[in-house]
Length: 175
Image 1 (cartoon, rainbow, N blue to C red):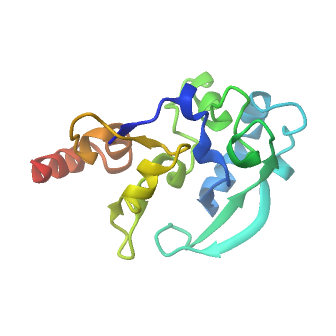
Image 2: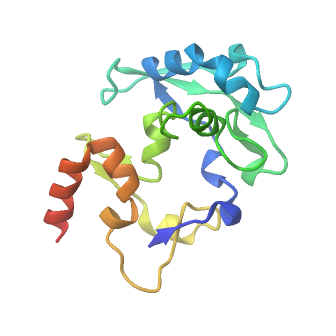
Image 3: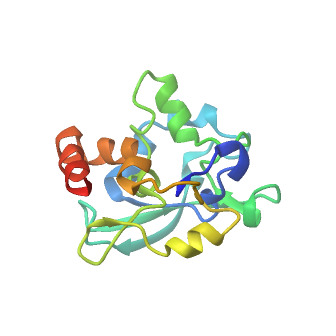
C-alpha cells in the first residue's frame, strides 16, 4: 500500500470528525484564538467545535473522548466534514500550529494523526480492514506497485507518536 495524495482524496478521512481525549479538546480550546482564523467564516466560534458526545476510551489519558463537530459539506466526500477541515482540504488545527511555529501536529488529536492506523483491543497500533481500505475510492491508502511495509509507509506518524528509539525498534523487528 501507499498513501493517498491530498489533492486526490481531498481529505475523505475527515468525513465523520474525530474523537479526542479531554486534554486534547482543552488544548484546542485554549488555543482557539490561533485556530479560529484558519477556519471558514461561520465556523470560527469555539463553542461549536464539539458536538457534546463523550465516550469512554481506555487508551486515552483521561479515559474519555469527546467528539468534534461535523458540518454539512456538499463538496466533501459523503456530504459532511469535520468542523476543522478547510475548503483546501487541510486541517485548521495543523495549519494554525504551523503558523504559530510549532510542529504541524502539535494541536492535532492523537486519533487524527494515527488514522488510518488504529488501536486493537490491547492498545497496539494496527491496520484493520486492509482490503476495504484498498477498495474504497475515498480511502487514505492506495494499492502500490510493490510491497512497502506499513512501518515505512507511516514512518512520520510512528516517529511522532512513539519517538525515534521505539520507531527504530519496530523497524528492526519488521526487518
